[in-house]
Image (cartoon, rainbow, N blue to C red; front, side, top):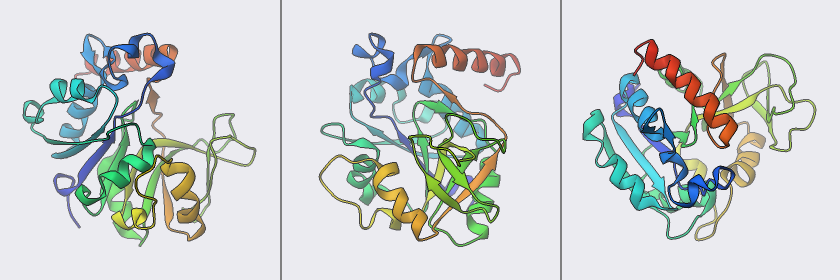
Length: 242
């Protein structure tokens, strides 16, 4: 089994950040300032400390600013590469466009969330049981309005629905690991949502497992959640985690 330094991390960083406007009219969402630093810098530092070394940033909107802010990654001891969308392609379209540059398997992280996670535990769990993908799921065993995942006692994910219907018991926490094969049948050359168009088939084939975490994730996609993320990262800095 490879260690974390062998695993490529793919970060979805091409979103428009409409809920953060007017801030994101001039900068991409992942560069939103947090404690005086671009948010993505905290992600990259955390990934390096966890043991990762290879990062592929999928960029679109104002992507040149992200390249300028992150460079080749050497300041963090990382190797950062970029795959740029000519126009926003959605989460699935961006991944399909970069398919030839994805390693097998690859870790997938949302560029606008922060999750303190035992990445080694996720990797070990992924290789322990054959599957095409494994998604971190934040769950406390009770339904909540924002739940979008149902994970069964066998560890398989049996439903994913962003409309948050009843009967779900967890939340996609923004970190997953996938085999490259999940993109084989994906449509090329058009925008689409990975979650809405590819995950249902993967779930139906019992190819997607869940990795439960009790660590909550922080989403910086709105002014309110950005403040909460900043408060969390301030505590992390106080505890010398960065």
